[in-house]
Amino acid sequence: MSKFRNIIFLLFLISQTISVSSDDFKEELYIKPLPPMHLYVYFQFITLITGDTYEHSHLAPRSLKEIMSRFQVEELHLTLTEGQWRHKQWGYPVMDAAPGAELYAWFAPTVTDVNANWKKLSATLSGLFCASLNFIDAHNTISPKMALTPLGAMNIGLNYTSQFARYASLPREIVCTENLTPWKKLLPCESSHGFASLLNSRLIHNTNYHSIGVHIRKVCSNNECTNYNFEVKQTVALVYDFKIINSINWSFKLLFGQGLFGGCPLSSSSKIYIDLTSNDTLPFKLSPKPISIIQSQRGGSDTLLAVYDIKADSPMINIGAKHSIDNKFSVTIPPPLHFNRYVLGYGKEFGGIVTEITNTYWAPIDIILLENAPWWLPIQLSTLRINGEAESSLILKQYYSPGRSRQRPYHLELLMRLPPKSTTTVTIDFEFVFLKWQEYPPDANHGFYIGSALISAKLPTAKNYTSIPVDGTTLESVINASKPWYPAVFRTNGAMVSLPTPDFSMPYNVICLACTVVALAFGPLHNICTKELVLKPSGTPISLRQRIINLFKKKKD
Image 1 (tube, rainbow, N blue to C red):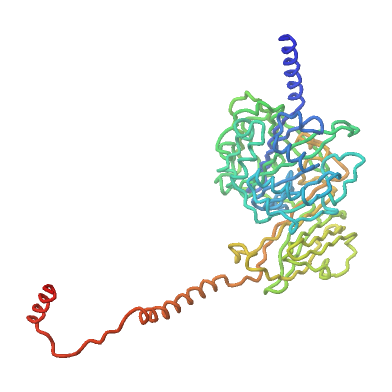
Image 2 (spheres, helix red, strand yellow; image 1 turned 45 degrees about the horizontal axis):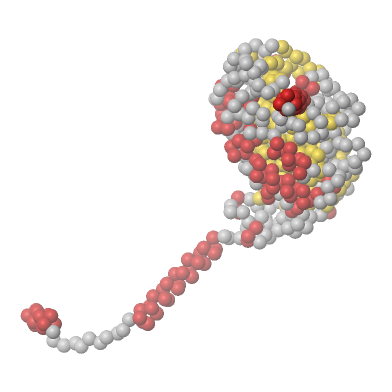
């Protein structure tokens, strides 16, 4: 009997070992100089789970597993961002994110009540990441029709329509250490080993732009895409300003406060990629030298990448760059597609939102513009103008869903074809709404934030394009990955409006005035009602001797 138990225990250990080896964890770091005064640093931690279930995963976080299975989520994307990415000056990031909190997901077609699952999903993620995602509700949620598509593989035979997709953003959300700490705990090595040990909250929050994200999707495990694997990707994007670190030369100790003490022991690959493309205009030398330099040709763009392969038992390494010329400025070439967004109007009655989209390429580019206006900022479709014209041939297709007060936002999507070498201006007017006094935030005079607009495009060239291909997972898949077109979803800069705000100091003034009047009126009335008036006889004044005699008489009595 004991031998039989030992055999069963041995088989159990073998099965556990096989299940552990089936999971794969990789960590990568990408560094790209953004001339002349910024540096882009991008972390990504990838956990690939064999099979389309979490049941036998030992590297992926169990909390995310239960969220995906309980609410029947097929694909999930969550980002928490502080700052604004400057597409015109910096090019395109590996993964774009909107300022504040952004959450969108696709649910399984078997879900009967998507809105209920969406509400529970946002509330659960709010508790997991210590964020205000519980404020996501029907009044700020939309179902994108054209702008967003699933990035992962979907089950064949199931109808994935936009009714199973949900998107919401909270542009006012502030990102802090309370969000980063639970994010680190989802990693296999947490923050004790590997690249995550470089994420010092005191330093990474002192940047011009920082964003953390969690992205979960299904990927194909074979060429026919009949089997699926789960991919859990955690990302961190940082943009350092050389003026803040007081040096154009950078190193790990200067950026993160320490060197790198090896990779994560549970990681099958720990690599660092440094973009050397800007070395022609702003030359610098890396120390220590990389193990290899790879040249990548992608969509008409040539890129040089320095590669470092970090092992778990590697000694402490402090990678740095030293520029040969400190005071040299370069002219940045804008990407093929960049944009700007701002608010028009004066007074407290009418206003407008303007989105300027510039196509610097020699051929037309098709884009999808998504505007998500809150219910307290009603946009009027009749006021839509393209380059000042009410009717334009640039619009190929449009979708508009009117909002409803305190129930749902306004939703507008435009499929447009941008002419080459041109700037297209999209303008739409809105009205200011009077809110109830309980609906104003504590700092009502600060203003109300408007979420970023989404621009989905298929770029014909890969210049300033660093995104990972849809069928790729790691940064290695970017090398020589030329395609007929390059999909991208961009977020414009946010905006702020000042709604009609009552004078919240008036109640305080009224209370003070009322209390003063009551005090002045109550005092004399109280004295009259509680005190007795006694007449004192007037006569000759009493001498001191007589007063002393009267005093002794009172004591004797």
